Image 1 (cartoon, rainbow, N blue to C red):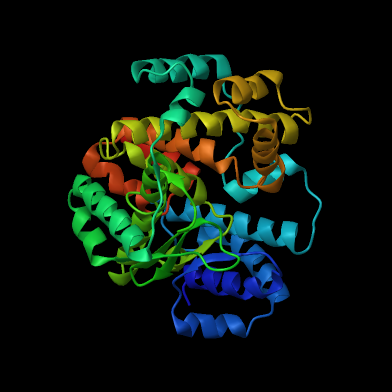
Image 2: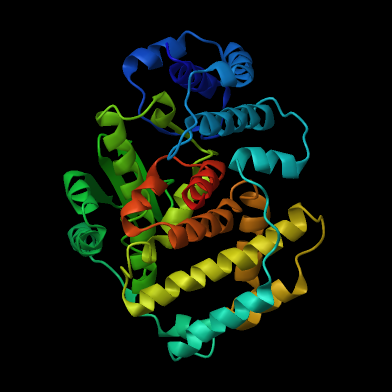
Length: 383
């Protein structure tokens, strides 16, 4: 086996140790490697992954632009080991250190919310709104009476969005995106990549959505967001232009920050792909990620209550009711505290890259990058 294949096999073997926790998110591994993984105990797999981390410099993996595979492998190994130590073996470690390992990215300083608010309100004024709450009240609501009506609406939107993607439009057309109604236990909206170019987008029929939400959800989860991300990954795998590390994506993964950053920035990476109202809605979401990040940082890093100014913004500018505020705060600060910071960190990383790269260079962002490999790519480009 190659070094990357051995990392993959032991990562797959480790999955059996996780109970009630999604460890493997997307797995494209061939059956021969899955069979090998089934013969390795989780304890032995974890020990071997630690050995592989120490042997990385002699792995034979190159560390050259644009993908810097040895750097990515180091991020991946540390992330996988940290998941096992944290969620299976309950190793005690300072929270900031744990979240850095799980994100494979540094914890950034809180945002200057006054500066962010000035920019945000200027966007709203240009669109004719005095606050985000007023904008939210103006949104057009839609409801679908049948799965066929829902599917036609979503796939038409995907087709129109794909026209912005240049040569990638053909790749989207070759893939298969199925629209389904969520089953029992599924969230009202979700996306799953199922391999071989197939993905499923779940949207609840009985729920009334705003049109802006649907446009942003589909562009984030499908095209040019996560579905496109996995179609590009699948093409690399099918054409043999990658290594075995590309065959697995764990729940916490070094590629999460860039993957989520691409999805949240999908409204403008390839030019404006949304109507003006949905475009503004996307900017609202980015602003919210920054506000909630400051709350997350204050509670989990500074170990203090959320800052008063952030809560004022959510109440007064966003129009949040107290129950909604408590619910959203609980999710970002507690329930998803290991994951939620990847959004603002990824948004910042991808925005930084988009300013430096040409339209033709954007596919490099989809090449299984961590924040550190992306930073190295930008450093190399400016050298």
